[in-house]
Image (cartoon, rainbow, N blue to C red; front, top):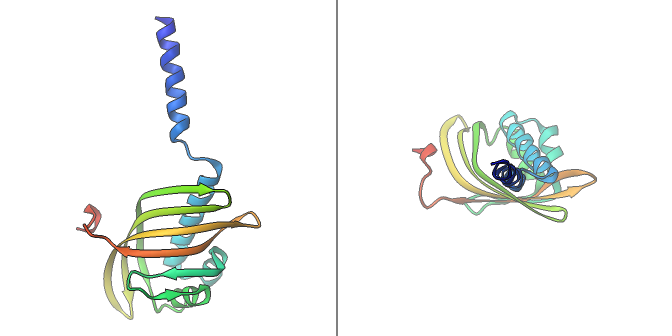
Amino acid sequence: MKKMFLLLSVICVFATATYAQSKSEKEVADAVEFMRKAMISGNKADLEKVACEKLSYGHSSGKIQNADEFVETIASKQSVFVTIELSNQTIKIVDNTAIVRHILTAQTNDGGKPGNVNLGIMLVFVKEHGNWKLVGRQAYKLLVPTPAAQ
């Protein structure tokens, strides 16, 4: 009985370790959350902090923005996010690069016109001087709406 308990305990420890986030994954998840909050607040300094100067920010419409355009569009309230919810997030890290995928569900108010978006997102972060910076973003329209959007 003791051997069985010990074996089950070891299996549980290894199973937990397999699913735990690494330190880098936690840092990237924190950077994504910082960006989410900055996009809602429209705080220019926070948006600049998360955006790499070489940012390529792709919208689901096909529009591409650089870092300055991304920051200015949100900070100037041309694009307003009232809420942003992220789901089904995955993070893959290779050296100093992280690929993040998630579903973004948001309420918007662009130009005083309320709206809703439900998009798939791929983010690419690079680690620069100890900080994870957004260098690439591509949004895409989902083929099947997620339950949160219905």
